[in-house]
Length: 464
Image (cartoon, rainbow, N blue to C red):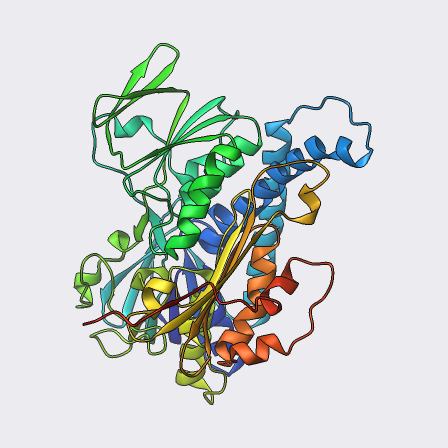
């Protein structure tokens, strides 16, 4: 007998789990299917294990700096297998928590590969997580696609020799030499992780500066920090082919340069994970490989079918996927209540000197505003005794007329924690005067955001 539900969610990542749980709490009959990892990419192959590995690299730098503060530190070495084993135990614990949350909310769980039979029928079959599962079919009035994204490989000769981010979390040994292709979130973060743990790292990217899409001043500052963190940058270069040799690999770049390495890591973006879903059976339209649904609406071209998270390829961040799932569940089964400001979603890149930002970059702001720019650059206090190189950079982008702070940007220690607090101010549209009348907390780096009094430059609105 086929089971019927009010809501069926395909994908148990952050957005899907939130949507299912909130809908069930409002009394809906809810089911969810997961093919690979309870908790999705963020918990298993993304934010959480990545941050644990960032911490591991940070400990190495702290140990190196400890003698300058009087600590008699003996020579130490990092044990990769210990880190990976500890990471795996924590991920397994989190998997159980996600399952428990869903079960306590009364959500029915299916383990397997879900695909559409028609607009209201889903088939669940064997998958990586359940290879021996029997085929089942369910019907639902509402179906949510929340299957996330998957790494994108470059189509170059020898691409099969490269790893992607999914593989990096399960390497048996840390490679002594790593060539990272790509300088987005994943490329920058893993370059910092491997360099911090002792690997020789080459970073290859096509743009003049890393982190395309972020404020250009921060991008330029980050480029200056790369060599200070043991990373050799190859800007404005594209890979042509990967060659396997006796002692590793050769990454051939355009122009004839060759990088000798033990590991080629393709950090070349991600794309919506839609292939297994058989969307044509339900008539769901896609555009450029994604489902064109808005974050605060989630509707597709088919009534009763919704899309949230990375499959829409809009924000590709865990907190926005959670917000989209929550909004949708309340709209379908409860009283719409909470609001989220997607336009002021803060972002962070967990490099050796982390970068964080909220609101408009300078380049975005000048499209519609005359802007005043305030900046501060300084050596963090914790680096004064150790002599470690690399300055912190802070930046405020302010509307010249209204004095509303349009954007806040920082690269340096504690940047993500500081910017999360400032995200409230940017969302509330506080002014530079509000920042100026706030008394700083001393001695901190954060106080610089309320003591920047001198105008760095005025930039008129861009014509056209």
